[in-house]
Each structure stands twice: as C-alpha cells, then as structure tokens.
Amino acid sequence: MEESSAIIVLLTISVILLSVVIVALLATVTLLVVRVNRIARNIEKVSDNVAEATEWLSPVKLLSTVIDLFRK
Image (cartoon, rainbow, N blue to C red; front, side, top):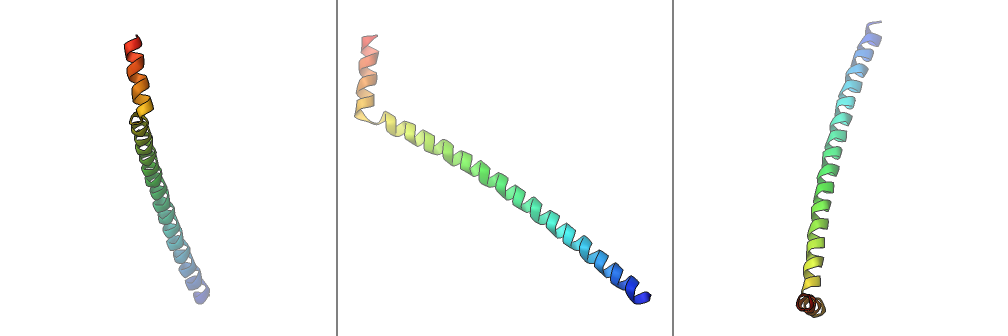
C-alpha cells in the first residue's frame, strides 16, 4: 500500500508540473502572437504610407493636382 500511495503522489506532482508548464507555454505563445500582430499592423501602415508617398511622387499625379488647383 505504501508504494501505490507514493506512486500516486508522484504522478499527481508530475501532472501539476506539466499543467503549469503547458499554461506557461500557452501564455507565451499568446503574447508572441499579439506582438507579431502589432508588428504586422505597423508594417502595413508603413507600407501604405510609402505607397501614398510614391503615388504623390509620380509626375502625372503632380501635374494633374496642380492643374486641378488652377482650374478651381
């Protein structure tokens, strides 16, 4: 009887430790996903700004904007 109770205690301790490790890993993965999502949104904003800036640098856009200003 003494051996089986020791085995049960050891198995309980190992299950608790594994549960704590799994919860810690899930929390870490969740934090990483949130940070990667934030970085992806920032990259999308930067690429949109670069696309808008390159659009304004095209000669056709500049000339059409200047012409539209003088027509009004």
